[in-house]
Structure formats: C-alpha cells, structure tokens
Length: 150
Image (cartoon, rainbow, N blue to C red; front, side, top):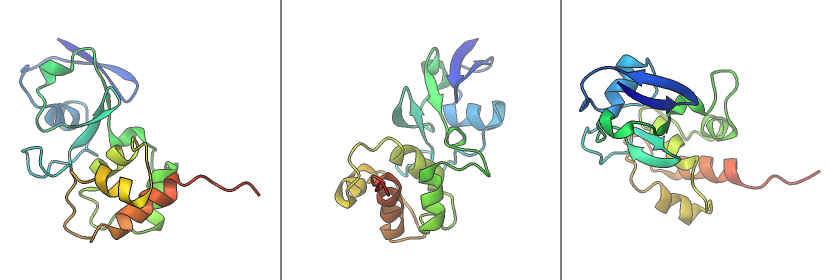
C-alpha cells in the first residue's frame, strides 16, 4: 500500500506500483481536474504540485509518491469559492477551452516573481493551443499584483 497526502487529505493506494500519478488521481481518487495532454511531460497540462513544486504527473509512477504531499487544481478553490488566481483567469480570459488551465494554474500558484517577463519564463513549459498567451500572462500578473490600500 502506498500512503500519500492529496490536497491535505491522507490517501492510500493499493494497486500497481508503476501506475502513473495522473491515472491514480483521476481514476482511483476521482480528482479529474488534472488533464493529460501529451503523456510525455512536454505540454504542462498534467502539472500538479509535489511537495510544493510543479511536476508532470504523467511521468511519475505512484510508487515514488509514498509519503509525499500532492496538490491538484481542486486544492485551489471549489466552484463558487474560486481563489484570486482562478477568478483572474476567469475575468481576464486566461482560460479558453480550459484544457491547459489546471496545469497553468498550478504552476502560476507557485511563481515567486510575477512581472510579465517572469510569468512568461515561469510558464514556458506549458502549451496552450487556444491563445497567444497574452491573456494568460495578464491573468497571472493581475492576480498577483499587490492590492492598493484605500
């Protein structure tokens, strides 16, 4: 049995040790927010956080996740109570078809520098077929910009 923490909840997996993390999340734990794009770790669609760092869940066998902390897009905010980053993607058209959005959101949630150039570099491992990335960069920079006090 493999024990891990997913979105703050202790979980156990009994099954093939080399089953991919993305498949365990979607099929065994019912967390379908994480999407599979290329299956080769090149597109960023399947990005989750492993111990706080972005990782391609399509490349990781579940046996390597024992004792680790995994966060999926479901950890950011439920429908009706979206996180500021999710709201910004919604308000600034950072999401179009939505397929790449979960991975983008997970990586963006950990960007330390949030100027437009830093966001472009930080998200460079993500492919989006719908946009020219302008709205995605705007969504991240607007969500992370310090708020002015009134």
